Every structure is written in C-alpha cells, then in structure tokens.
Image 1 (spheres, rainbow over the protein chains, first blue to last red):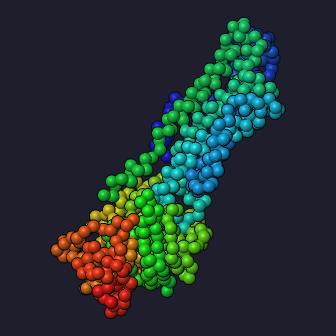
Image 2: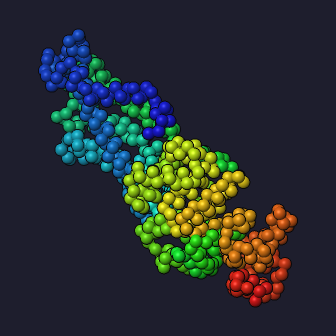
Length: 278
Length: 312
C-alpha cells in the first residue's frame, strides 16, 4: 500500500488489532495454563487464576487467549473468501458491462435479499456444526456489498483515459483488469475487507452463542454461551462472560477503526489531472 | 511499405435528436513513411477517425466502411487480432496526457509495459530498453524519472512519457491526436520534434490530427482538410499552403491571425440536421444552386483531390 494509506491508518485501531493477532499467534506461550486442563470449578479471580475458572474447571484467562484463534480465523478467512468472490464479480461485471453485468448483478441482488443470519442458522442446524461450514456459509452470503462497491469503482475507472490508453497499447482484457483496474480498486476493497472481518466475527459469536457453533472448539462466542448456560450469569460471575464479550467488542472496534481510517486514502484521480498542464 | 487505407468510413452516433453523422464516407490512404496531417475545426470528426482506427469507439457507435491495415479490416477484426496490431504496429498518442497514464503506477513500468506484454521481455530488460529510448529522447535524470508517478510530472513531461511508451515497440504507424494540446509553445515544439525524430528513426509513418495550421505546415508531407465529418481536400503540403483549393480551406487560412484574422461567416453545421447538398454551402462565398442540392463528389484537380463543384 502507498505510504499515504499507512500514514492515515488509525493508530489505536492498528495497535489493538496487532495485539489481538499477536495474542492469537502466541496464545500457547502467553496463556498460563492449558485451556483444557481442569482445576477447581467456579473459582473467582485470584492470583492463581487470573479470571477464575469455569464450570468444568478450565482457566478462563487461558481459554480467552486461545479462543482468539478461532474467532479471528473465522473473521479473516470469511472476509478473505467473501472479498475474493466480491472482487471477482465486481471487476468482471464493471469491466465487461452489458449482459454479463446484468446477470451478475441480478445474482448479487438475489443473494443480497437473502436474510443472512436466519439462513446461516438454518444451514448450521441442518449441516454438521463445524467452523469450516460457518466460514463457507458466511463467505457465500457476505460478498454482495463488496461486489457492488467494486463494480461501481470499476465502472468509474474503466472510463478513464489510461484505460483507453492501455487498449491502444494492445493489452488484453485480463492485463488491463489486473494491472490497471485492480490496483485502483484496492482503495475501496481494503476498508470493505476490514468491515467484513468485523461482521463475520460478530456473526460467528452470535451463532456460537445460539449453540450453532462448533462444540469441539473454543471461541469467544462459545465462552459466552457456556457462561450463560452453565450458571455464570446466575451466580453473577461477570468475569466469565464479560471477558470474552469485551474481547469481541474491542477486536471489532479496532478493525472498524482501521477500516474507516482507510476509507479516505484513495488518491483523487481527477484532482491531480486537472490544471496540471494548463 | 505498410499502409493504412480508409474506405468509405462512416461513424454515426444515436442521440435524443436523431443520428449524428460524426464521420461521413471518408476515404483516404496513409502511405508508409509519410506524415499526413488531418486538420479541421473542433467537432468536425477528426478524433472520431483516430478512435475508429484504434478501436476505441463507444459501443453505441454505428460504423460502416473499411479500415484496412496489412490487408486486414480492423473494423471486423476480433479482439485478439486487434491486441496484436495495437501497440505493436499502430500506436497512438492522445490529448490530455495526464489522464492517459495510470495514476498509481510508476512511469518506468508504464513505458516498459508494451515491451513486457508484446515481446514477453523480462521486466529488467524492458526497463533497460526504456532507458535507451529516454536517453535518445534527451531525458535527463532518467533513474529518477523512471521511479516517479505521473502526478509528479507536468503535462509536457507526461506527454513525452506517452510518446516514449507509444514508440518503444517501433510501430509502423503512429497516430497523434492533438498531441500538443494544452502545452505551451516551447513544449509544443519540443514534443513535435521528439515525435518527428522518433518517426524518422523508426521509419514509421505519422498520422497527425490537429487544428494547428502552423504545426501541420511544419511537419506534414500531405494535408487532409476535414469539415463536418467529410474530407474536403487532400493535397501535398507545399501545394496546399501555397494555394488551398476548397473554399473552406481558403476561409480557414484567412481566419488565421497571421493572415488577417477574418472569421468564417456563419456557424458550423448541426450534427443532427446537416444542410442538404454541400455541407459548406451556407457559409461559402461561391455557393450556387447546385451546391444547395447536391453533395459534390471528390474531384481530381491538378492531381489534387478536392470536394467542390468549383473544380468540376
């Protein structure tokens, strides 16, 4: 990315998000206990157990650190796949226009109308609950807005002089899309990508909280669910459910901050081209 | 000798008020090695011809006729064939140089791109070839320039960059559509000098589109005058500037500041409802009854071509 984008990027967002990534990568080293090891259950926070223990005696702090992996993986992978699909459809649609555009945008509209969370819930109920299925299903319904934004940008860029210029140089469609249009679309794609990460993480948490997540893996949503189901709420053990809740919120806020800060970094193509040569 | 033959080219655009005939039955040959200047006022269809040759016309354009290059009709060519010809055999330099460059790619890569794509040259080698071209063009600080972005350059610099990019492939035909528009006098001369220099080096031919009489006089071997979508006169440059035949060309010459600044009476004809007969008759001092009824054919006169009944 160009230096200007890095300069404008939200500093608090970047620091917090990098912190979460580091925690996820090094959770094995950072956590004091094995998250599956069992100690005295329902313990309050103490020196031994920083955030106490849960109903089956797992150390909640270690659990919290390890859960970041699943939550972030779901968010990032979903956003990666969804942005990939959206980018492809948006580029093809905006570049070729005509019938291809009509067909692809009709498909996009149809997918856009599907109520996402209910669909994911139904699919999660019928399919085996697994993170991979959640990732795939979320990706398949989350690309639509990316596709529309990328298409709009592509339509704008393909009318610019340097595209005609590339055509007169005899460059193929593929070459023009990848070297002339894609680098200019990145500026709308990255903020969109960050927002997709955030909404995918929230969806994962909601699904897990509803009991549709993967029971074999620990995630923040799963932790809140167990805290509610197994007495954390009734016994007022706020550290049990507040910790993963705060983690999700903080992580999503940092991602959204980054996304918003990147939204204004697009170079103003018309601004520099005007007046320069007159 | 590779030539570009334009045969009965017509381009029409649908508008709310009906079809606009931007180019009407235009035929001419562009002979290998020559400089042909197409002159005419703004809106007469000069640039549409350039766009038609390069295959850049918008989708709604209705095109008829033939554009023959190397025995193949470019208007019927598919995209693959066009991609092979464009950039390699025919290159174009358009007006608005700052808009014609990708804002977020370095200059060096943009000049080298045709070499990488068409010749399959590795990037390093291509950049080396670009260096040589820029050196030939008299650029200084080449290293710095190759790493710059278009917005760091002035319009004149960007135009020179575009010329370099068009010329790295040694095209047989270079189409220059008002390449000096928006440049000051000094830059204008420099850019034209560069174009002619490269043209000579590569033995390519130049199809220059301009409304600048002076530039056409200095550079062209032959002159074609266009009015309202039609070519009204084609002549050798020397003959033409000594004595233009067509009344429009004569009026155009008289309207130059150096020749008395006499405006041509009347207005350019409407695109949707062109006058019947000769399109210039409402503004022509020699107009007769025949001119109002019939559109004159292209006539041979002293081995020059002119579209006017005066020479019948």
